[in-house]
Length: 278
Image 1 (cartoon, rainbow, N blue to C red):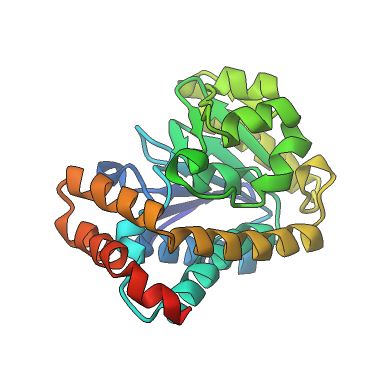
Image 2 (cartoon, one colour):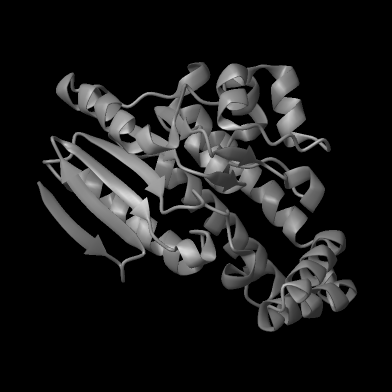
């Protein structure tokens, strides 16, 4: 067995019997996808893809959260509106391409709450196993954002129209692990203490059988890449609308994140001027 730490310990990597487990390791910040965390995850996935000793990958988080989603305050910077729009498109597109393009079977082991992009990206993997402490939230509608991570088509394919609408629509349904399994969002749910051992068993079977990379719901890689490109533009459009900018300012200010909050306030207040430049 080999063990190593990568990218300033943001991602812990451990390989056993052909299975590499990547653990998002920022529990104090709920393993949210800051710019640093996303860079570390990108590098870790790249390394696992190139590693001949890795036949399958498990992605999980350090308790208590699986991942609190994308940290907008750390990733959005002031700039010319065209450049800002292009940056958001590229940022969103590349994030999900890391999962769509990953060449080996990947199993997501959800150990606690998952929010936003970490949930939609999980459904782009070969499988999702969750502990009894897991919950799944995709609050895009409440935030004034469109669906992302290919969820505009993929959610309905894997769990049906009604459940997809409940999660992506105004209701903002947040299923538990058991409810998510019943709906078809995930395939397995186990006691929290058994999560990683059960995930290892599944991934080792994949490794032994040389399982090929697959997508759920009958989706294909080429289609998902096209959908991700479209959704990324739609997300960027929404990000630069006044209601979203104002909402993010208020949210971040309430959390005493003054710097990021002021970035959104500046974009919100100056929107009538710079929106003409787009």
